[in-house]
Image 1 (cartoon, helix red, strand yellow):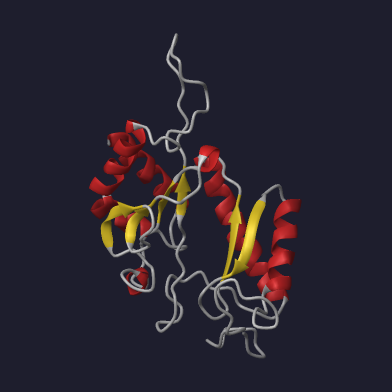
Image 2: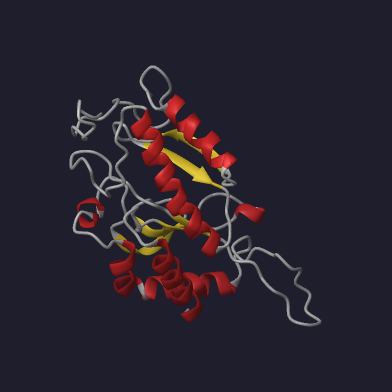
Length: 221
C-alpha cells in the first residue's frame, strides 16, 4: 500500500497465500488489468495467481527466444509498476521486501531445441529436455559448474542474499526433479514443455547479462 504522497508504506495489500482467491486475494483484478495491457503490447501472459507471501503475485508469460524474453521482462516490470501505481499501490521487485516472508524469485525456464545435422534423423525442434538427451544433461552440468561466477549476475544486490537459502529459495548447487531447495529443478512437464528451471535469479537482474551468462555456461558444458 502507499501513503497519501504515493510512497510505499511497507504494508502489504493483502495476506493471501499460494493460489488463494478472493476475498483473501486482493490482487486478482490488478493482475487481470496487467495481463490485458501486456496482451495489447504483444506480450502473451499464460498464467497468473497469488503467491505464498502477503501481497505477492506471479504472472508467467509464454516462452520466447532469449533476446525477446529479456526485452519483454523490462516491459513487463514497467507495466506492473504503472498499473499498480494507478491503483494506489507500489509494486516492489526487491528480492526480499519482507524479511519474515517469502522472497521474490525470477525463475528462468529454459528449453533446448536440436538443429539436425545434414542427413540426421532428428527432427527440427526436438526438445532435448523431453528425453532428456545427453546434451541437456551436459548443458545443466555447465550451469552448475559456473554457478559461483554467474551468481554475481543472477543476484546483483545485497538484498538478493537475504532471499537465498530459505523458504524454497535455492540453497544447494545441484539439481532435482522435485526439491525446490536446489539450484536447478526439472518440472514435471513433458513433451514440448519439458525444460530446466533455474531458481536462483531474482528480479533485480539485468536480463541481457543474465541470459547471456546462462547460455554460455550451458554451452561450455
